[in-house]
Image (tube, rainbow, N blue to C red; front, side):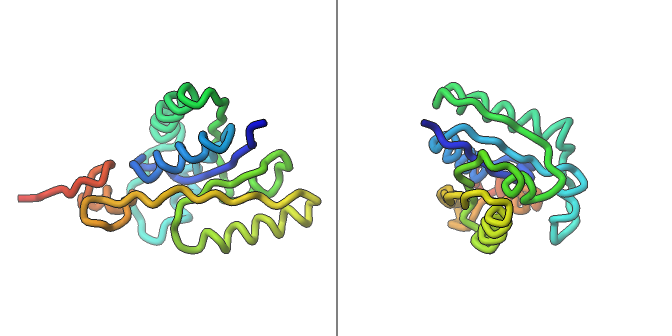
Length: 161
C-alpha cells in the first residue's frame, strides 16, 4: 500500500534540491504537493525578491517535473496552490508522511503540525527528509542563490566577467 505523502514549497525557481524532494516523495508514495500562492510566497520571504506566478509559471514547471516522476514510479499526484504553510497537513487525516528538505527549523514545523493533528484526533505524520543537494562550491542549492546569479538550477557556479 502506498503512503499518502504531503510536501510543500514555493518551487520558484525550481532547482535540483526541489527535484530531490519530489523524487523522495514519489519514492515514498503518492504525493500531494502544496505550492505556495503568490501572496504566501511574498509573506514567507525574509528578503523581497521576484517570485514567478504560481498559476502561470511555477505550477506549470512543477507539473512537468512531476509527470516524469509519476510515470517512473507509477504514482498519482496532486498539485494544489496553498495559502497557508501547514494547513493542508494539519486538516487532512489521510496523510501518512511529510517530505521535507534538510533545512533549519523543519523539525519545529513538524512538531507544530503533529501537535495540531493530535488535537484533531489524527495520527502524527512520519517524517522523511530529502537528501541535501549541493552546488559545485559545496554550499546548498537554493532559489535565492539562483536569483542572485551565483549558481544555476543544477548548482553550477556562474562566472561573471
